[in-house]
Image (cartoon, rainbow, N blue to C red; front, side, top):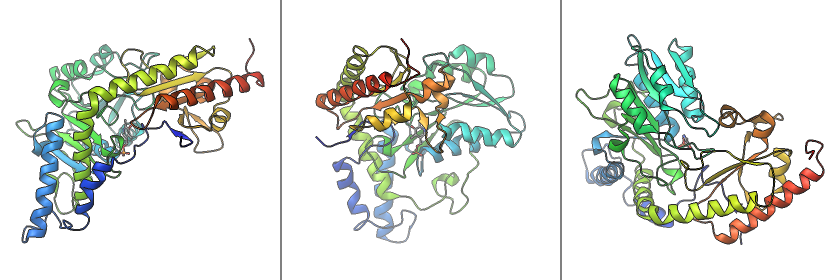
Length: 389
Ligand SMILES: *Cc1c(COP(=O)(O)O)cnc(C)c1O
């Protein structure tokens, strides 16, 4: 067994060997610029990129012309939110989003706020769920855009995006959905969800880093976005820059594999995740599950351990590579905005671990990690003035 055991698949995933095999010729034999129209090198690259675009579109129920390639979900979210908001700023300069969104949604919304847009950030319940009624109440005749994620990256909580989409459509509000964490784990279909804009990233589903896509619904008239990058006018003018053909080919291959594996793999991971949860909770008291028990990604488990110091716990559980409920960007750990939005105290948020399982994990991994967590929490609580029972 290789230590530490990787249980941080929501942060990133290793590239599937089949994906790497598909990518390699794009660096050498098929190195052409997909925008070169005058020779076969360009044609070959364009053909590879367009075939990948068609496969990615089909995987989410879209048309190929509705896929705009980006450098990842951060860029896709920025393009969707800023790019659309800027087309409606004069008459619909109000944007609605949710407190538990990824920073790659919240920060573009904050940037719009500084520019003079009105931004409403909706609260969630203690399971991290957004009540669609909250969205209905927040929408006004001046609302142009709402951005609501499908699955939360920290807790795995799933939002009722299709219900929210219906509310938005009734009022002529465009809906963007960050589906980065959902894709490859649960079904993502732009028609079933009825969203207008949807972000994806390859490296969260065993594809390469540095490539993602924005789905842009083609309606009459076509949904228009103000580009962030000006340049050669690639991607129908929405995202200039030479196409990352190796990345795009890898992305399509990774998505195909993920879809094919999904029914069995999601069931396998849910069983492992539940075993991890039960194994820890049956042996420790005062452990809170952060996330919706029923509406949750199959691979994600976020736990808070009352009475322990989160940083010490992370150091102690050296058998596992997991994420914590705080961002350790400074000496002073900043508790997760997601857990705070769910009503957890700063201390409890800091004393949280996120286990996100993936293809490499086995039942033995679960046993090793559960035993290590129980051992460390018990040890820290024994020595802790915070823990009085
Ligand atoms: C990882 C992640 C992002 C950022 O994606 P990148 O491709 O790394 O930029 C955005 N949103 C969610 C929900 C994520 O999990």
